[in-house]
Image (cartoon, rainbow over all chains, first blue to last red; front, side, top):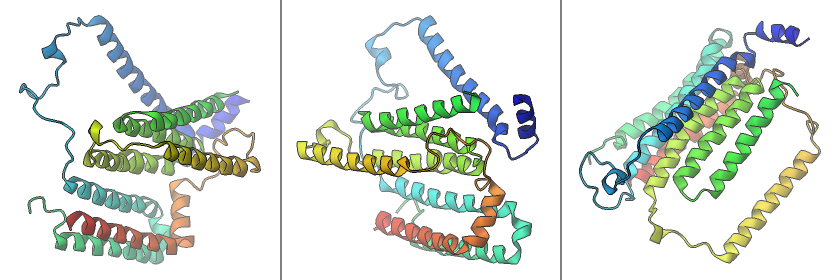
Length: 133
Length: 165
């Protein structure tokens, strides 16, 4: 009975059964990383000196505090990236249904992109992505 | 108990366990890393419920982009031990009461649903598949779709106004 069910599932290209190889690969990747970290921990020699345990900063002795608040410019770039990332994700369902949606769907997407384009022009005009100021 | 049930309970335990670790971790960086594990578990649930597009989008947007934002926020704030906010006794009590109220509401809402006591419904329903989702989004829900672009526009303008001064 289970074999029949599996056959019915495997004939459907939309079935989540096809994510089984992805899951297996993920499992093996995690297992491999865990195994290697454990094995190197067990087999490798461990000589703990003060020099070895200090943070590696390209060979220079570390100075100052690492926990300094960083510039807000990074955050601005990141949040703009997220917004345009979401815009691109909305294109996937449209691209799959491109033929069947016709002109109506095209106009909807053009309006969507138009709003984003307004925002993009605003960002460029304001110089928000300019690093030096 | 078949394979999908085992997978369902494993993913649920992973999601809840890592979500608890998000809350109780001392370091905010560890909290973010556990949150990524939670998102992976939830993506696994999406894929099991035949909503593969939602699962992948959850990974791309939340585990990819939003987590970078969270890390930037953590790096923006001052994390030195002397600058940590002191949590008073009353604040803890208020948090406990608020969280307990939310738990009560969720339990009461889930108590009367028809899915109570059922395992995960593997392979049923197809609204989470990319072509069905696209059809629904661009025909039935085209107005909310356009309104969401205005939301994005306002987010862009807000970020630039606040970030640039």
